[in-house]
Amino acid sequence: MNDTTGNPLDEILNRLRLTALRERLDNLLDEAAKREMNLREAVQFLLEVELASKTEKRVRMSQSMARFPCQKSLDQYDYAAQPSVDPKQVRELATCRFIANAENVVLLGPPGVGKTHLAVALGREAIRVGHTVLFMSAAALVASLAKAQDDGRLDDKLVQYTKPKLLIIDEVGYLPFEKRAAHLFFQLVAKRYEKGSMLLTGNRPVSEWDQVFGDAVLVTAILDRLLHHSQVMTIKGTSYRLKEKRKSGLLKNLPTVEEGPRSESTN
Ligand code: ADP
Ligand code: MG
Image (tube, rainbow, N blue to C red; front, side, top):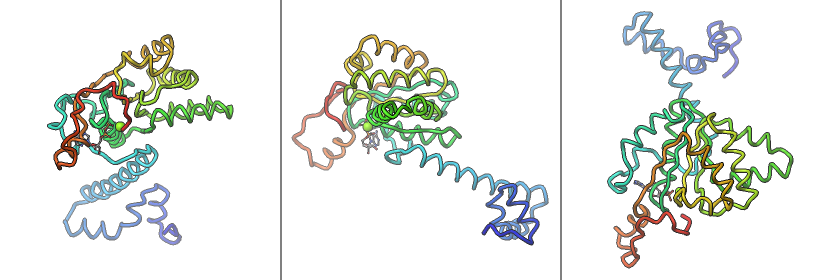
């Protein structure tokens, strides 16, 4: 496909990296002629095809680099099932202005209320508007930082996690951090502070995070930076997963788990 010898136009398209045009030029020119476009319209038509192809490639590449655990979209989020979620606030977050302003978002609530769903969906919106995103669980993140520290590469790792415009850290607080992990987490938060956004999800209210990080001084330092420019969204409700099961009659006898950010169970 890359052999453009002997065809000057192909060669130019190749050097300009207009790959979609190079591959589909004849068909596109036919189409332009069929639609009786003038030259200006034809140029626009051709460049629009190239732009769409480049955008699609960028989105695909960024999505794979983001390492989302699942593919969820905002369209799939059922607001009626979770009345404590304000659709207006979600729509505002979906504009990704918070990323442009390097603000943080903290999504809190019990298991199954859609924190990961919303985090992934907002991450995909961020990619759509051109940002880079990385999704990690809090446990995987601190494990990776600890390993890097053991290998004498902590600074490189911290730089790596500072690069994505949006870093999503899922499940903060499901497992308490050891002192070293808490300190590593602090270093990351300090490094990203006012430079790049973070979106955290957690099952415990921020007021209980001293138990998560195990150190009152450290947690103050972390929250100070994290919450300085931030939006906190607390979802109060029942697990969507259990709701679906209950509807189907599978879990008739199970009690309803209302408002349980303190819940110890993982999802
Ligand atoms: P959490 O991270 O809060 O524990 P998840 O985001 O993993 O919850 O949600 C559990 C499952 O339920 C996922 O499959 C998710 O897509 C679905 N879900 C949760 N809340 C909603 C909702 N309001 N509308 C549609 N699907 C939902
Ligand atoms: Mg989750």
